[in-house]
Length: 414
Image (cartoon, rainbow, N blue to C red; front, top):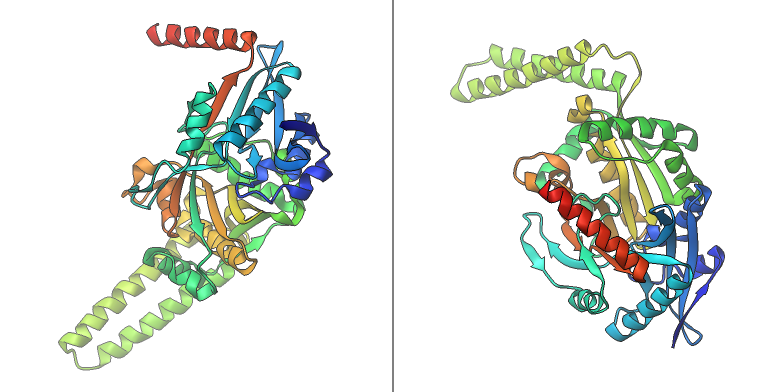
């Protein structure tokens, strides 16, 4: 028989990474963060007699002022998702939540339903079909939010299992991003980890990006608390242009190509020489143009901020959780070098997966623009999770659900 116990965060943390679907949203670290923000959080463990078979973090939130619902993000975690065990655990959870006066429960399991390649062709489908069926037979309503407003449900993931060296990792990338990495490094773009005191620099870039691309972000204190609770597992990475080194890079190339042109002009003007001259003049003009453009920016600082991202290293994966770029400086490739740096970190430290996390704009495939097009350069796969399952737990919850449906229909027909 399955029964549920409340446990301390310390007890919960001892076993939180033993599950295949372990993830940072179902961690004691994240729960402590939410508690520090005044959220109503509870740690639950599922036992079959005295054997631990699952655990989850539940967040309670008010709905309609007088009622509350239970929210489980990327959980629960079970030792296995065999239908009979899953059914017993969910029934025990519903019974427990009913006693906590919840009228509704919403779960978003960290489970894959389908996998697509970087051209959006389906590689595997219905991977969690039996789980989906069990939820349906138990009366849960399934939704898949394409906007991913409450929780991420579409991930771009790169497996690191079969890669053993930085060179193998580099060779696993697309030719275009390999060229870009080499080019941006030559242009003197640097990557460093921000200190706790400099998280505001990350947040400035994130805010600018959210305004440009119209997505919601948490307040800066939320990200500072992530660092406080995850410590070394949370890495705020920052890319900047070394301005003096970049100017030297441009000047050196201008001098080199000027010298090549001068020497070629002195010699016999064969067809081959003329081809080399044309190429050298094009290169010279390109570097001169870039130098002029950079001077026109009137940049006064030594370090020009480009991009910044927060990575959470948890369980078996490194997750690119949030971040962005200054649009006017995207041609310097800060985001590319940040992710290349963290891919190397993930490989070096034995992580199995690099998770680019929330992925959108798949409709822009082939345009060279957008979130998905950037990530697919790193050669991974698109993972579609099961979505969110919601169930009313009592007559009050069902009544509220009916009222919401009536309201939605009324709004549709108005």
